[in-house]
Structures are given as structure tokens and as C-alpha cells.
Image (cartoon, rainbow, N blue to C red; front, side):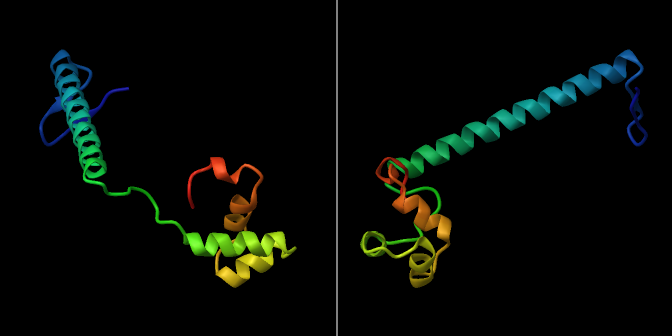
Length: 105
């Protein structure tokens, strides 16, 4: 399969065209790596400045305590979710047996 770039006169079936395409690909890869390094550096700087990254929790600590109290009194996950205005899966993650080991939500 050959590629022809008409406006600059490059064809990949010639040695010059393949060289051009290889160099172009190398520059694209280099640029991608630079973007990746800058992104990682920015995230590390934000963490060092004390910023919390990621999605904000749906439930406050008080709401989590309330949900756990409701679950202990026999309320269903659906009822708890309706009261707190969140999805059932959010409540399921909270009331799961190993919920204390998982990340905050």
C-alpha cells in the first residue's frame, strides 16, 4: 500500500517518501512523549500543592454515616439511594463487606 500526499509531492513507494514519513512519525512520537511528561509533571505539582485529584465524592462523611445507619436498620439500598439522591450502585459500594478497603466515593 502506498500513500501519496499531493500538495507536498510525497509518495511512500519511493525511498525519499519513506524517509519523509519515517521522520514525520518520529516527530509525532517525540511530541507525544513531551506532552506525556508535561502532563505527569503537572499532576505531580498539583499533588505537591495539596490538591485532590479525581472526581469529587458523591456523599459527604455525614451522608455516608446516615446511609450505613439506614442499612443497619434494614432499609434497602434502593430506599437509601432515594433518600440521599444517588444511584443504587453508590450505596452498594458503600455497604459492601470490604467497603473500608476501597477508595472514597
